[in-house]
Length: 314
Ligand code: ATP
Image 1 (tube, rainbow, N blue to C red):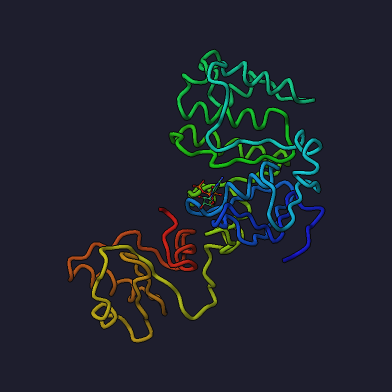
Image 2: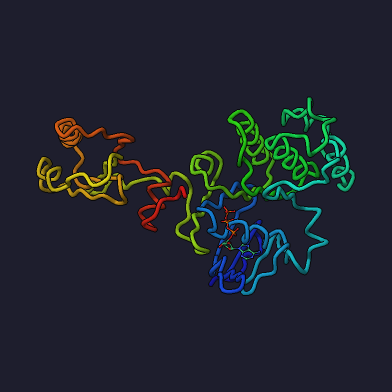
C-alpha cells in the first residue's frame, strides 16, 4: 500500500469498502494525474461505482486513504464540493423540473458557471429545454445530468457510466465534451464497462474486477504486444471446441494453439504470412468461419480475459 500523493488529482491508497459480507473494493491503489482522463473499466459489480462514490465523499472507506485535489472527500467535503462535478449513475432530479430550470438552479450555486443556454445547445438539448425532467428520454436525462456536472466549471469531473443507454449520436456528443474538458485542463474520472469508450477517451485505464486492480496503463500500453518478442499472437473467434490437435498439426511446430475461453482462440509463435494462410485454409477445409481475426494486437477485452480468465462483457 503506497502513501497518498499530494499533487495527484486523485490518490487512492489501500481502499477497502465492505457491505456486510461483500467486499466491494478490496485494497485498491490509484493515482489520477491532473488534466487527464482516467477510466475505471470493469464488469458489473467490479467496484467502480463504490470507488467513485468514495472519491466523491458519499461513501466513507472502511480502510485506506483517499485524497481528491489534496483534500479528504469526507472530512473536507464543504471545501471540495465547489471544485468537483458529479454525474451519478441514473441521473436523479425532481420529476417536475424543466431541463433549463434544473440547469439554471445548479448554475446559481456556482461562482463562475458556464452559460446554461450554450451548454444545452452543445449537448443537443435546446429543443427539450422546457420539457419536465420526467418526460425527457433516458438519453436526454443522461445529458442533462452531464450538463449539471460541468456547469460550475469544476476542476475535476466524475462521470459514472456517462454513455449508458445513449444512442450513437448522443454518445458522440458526450465523447466530444470529455475531450473538450481535457483540452481545458479538467481532470475526468469516468467509469465504463465499454472497452471502446475507455480506449477512445482515456489517457489511463485501470481495469478492475471484484474490487481489485487487474492492470493499469495507457490504451496503447495495455493493448500492445512486444514487437521484439520471438512469439507473436494471432487471435480469432469461432465456434467453441474446435479440434485444436488437428489445427496444430497444420501449423509449424513452434506454433501453440489454445482456446482461451469457449469460442476464442489464440495462436502463439512466429506468425508469418504462411501461418496466417494455414489457419484460414484449415478453417476453410473444416467449414469453420473464423471472425475477428487479428494479428499482434490485442483488445482490452483480450487483456481482461487473459488476466482473469473471464469475459469483460457480462
Ligand atoms: P456496475 O457496473 O453494475 O455499476 P460497479 O463496478 O459500479 O458495477 P459497485 O456498484 O461498486 O460495482 O458494486 C460492487 C459490489 O458491491 C457489488 O457486488 C454490489 O452488489 C455491492 N454493493 C454496492 N453497493 C452496495 C450497497 N449499498 N449495499 C450492498 N452491496 C452493495
